[in-house]
Image 1 (cartoon, rainbow over the protein chains, first blue to last red):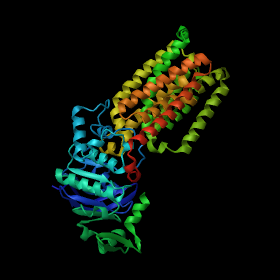
Image 2: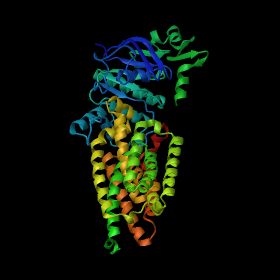
Image 3: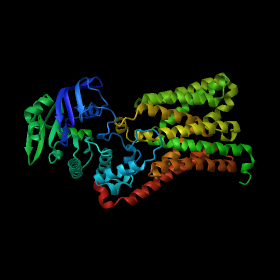
Image 4: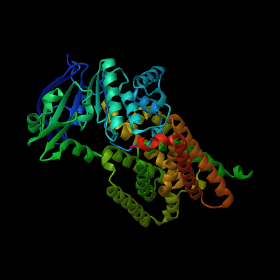
Length: 264
Length: 279
């Protein structure tokens, strides 16, 4: 049984075909970098795995079953899209809202939920941050709180949507090492969504690269190559490796870092 | 001061302020948390033609107000994110006030009450209205307790809540109905135009001062009730309108909380790491 398997899957979103006849599988416990330019369908793919979007063709299998909304075996960290207007709330309270937050009633956490929240916070070494308001935390610390939240309920699959956004290089490294270490220790498969391949090189087992409605999966050297990426981008791509870093270029424009800057 | 409770209208005013303060503080907290404060403002405006229209056909203005705000609340809830279009909201608001004015034009006998609907008249509240306010308040608070948990989750992290199976639309509509009824209650105290003062100022102040959610709701309620009580007392002493005092005290509370917040954050963050850590 694989953590995630796509069999000839087609996804459409807002009338646009995002993925077309895509097949791949992610083994249990693997750390996979999910890459691709803005609008390549990374978030849409995660939402399909979560059961929030039905594929218009093909079948998706998640941990041996069909995707279903509210699957407790999946930990999810959405991309931070909105400014946090509620920064006075402590990290612990923030994490606790996710523990049983789908049930009706008054938001008093049970002893079991508190225990689960603390366990998750300790898992990422953020227990000492828990009582502080989010406003007082740095970007990297806040991401750790959010990763802790995604670990609640002992998931077997972790979907992280752009956890590196707006972090500097040192904090990016720290977050990747943390996710890598936690994933290995707990045996969780991780789909780590990012604009940039370079920060991920140190940790990923394989990469899943989306572009032009297609996907390529394999280890870094197999996928991040001129011929493969040229097919995904639909234009001629040069891949240049310098001093352990990878640059993906089209017509002398560096694609990945360009996308990254654009998103900020 | 010792004679303030000798008057029945003052006693009723204090009852009403207590009831509405509790409701506005609790509902307002979630309203601010969700970034929907202008929805509260808009609902009150939409209620204005409801109140004047009800007067026109011989119904209670409070009833008309509540019906209109609830319908508008469901509408805003259904629209969801799409309701955050400032031009559309502005046009609906002005149309509402325009319609209210038209109804007043046809029913001039009601005109004397128009100021009360627009700016509130807490000193004119009858014991019967107090009882209606209390019953509605209980309904609102019970309903809020039932939806608070998914509401909080959906407010803080909508994408995650959706993935975990929270019905976002349903929660949003249910909450907007509560906001609508709470707005109608607040209009009895501060009027259509000044609802922000009671629904938003205490809650926003509380969000700046508290960390936990429960503490936040508690402080929000305490501030709303406290501001209303002090405003009533000041109105009694100065003969100035209660609504003015509520807006003034709400503003002072909010500004003060901003200063307190800045001071505590400066104090809490270690300057050696703050500079390069913040993104």
